[in-house]
Length: 305
Image (tube, rainbow, N blue to C red; front, side, top):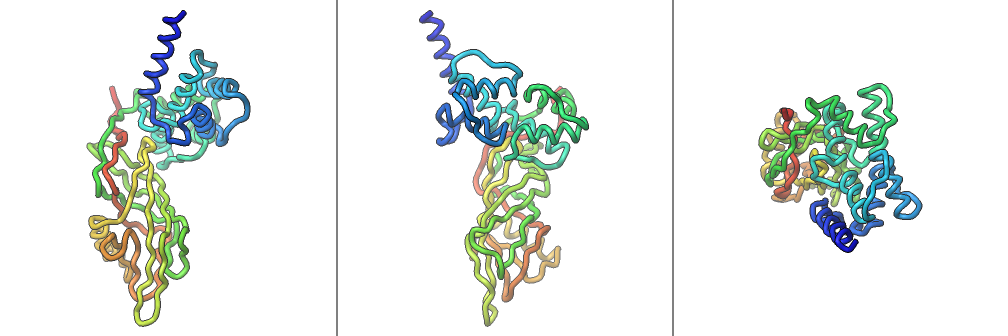
């Protein structure tokens, strides 16, 4: 009996060592279970820990699991919330959405994402455990059903072309306003998709100065925030020297008279509008860049055999 308990304890410790590292607010058992519930249902559920983890297991696997509560909660957390695992439900859904919709609905409950995908691909929803439904979709859209992914390094200053989804206006924009944008082209590293076209990010306006008399320039400073990689890893973006150079060329090509996208030389990560109020409309495309070297999974579009 003692040996069996010791073996179970060692197995639990090993699983913890191999599982994704939870943020501080999710590090406890209740925190991890609540995060798994939010991922699948959209909100934390009521009941005891045993009741709640059993409900999640039935919905995900079709049956409750055995073993220590620690291992069971860690298991559903890793599958539903974990980032970077090749078999996490997040990565699989991201890939299928990318292939079917050219977007990723990160932040939307898993149950709703699955229903949308099934209606688009199958015309109806399946009455099966979530794990089987996800696996079925992957096999339908991806040859062999085995995703060809491996970890890659996204270098600092990697260019990312984005499409503005929120108007920026030096006369009307306000500090704290959210600025949404969408990635235009796949960001490829080692012939693998790391940041897919269609991924959406969100920044925040941090300073605004309206145009004044005597040619005083209008100004909007933006923290460009993060955009998700194909595996859900958040990639920090900014506008620095390399992106600024590309944007000046893009401004000329697009005849964006009077609008110059600058980086930290003169204006940190912002927009500089010369001499008058200018609107940078929804749909404007320009470059930002990766703020720091980042590790993420990359998807090869050549299936495994």
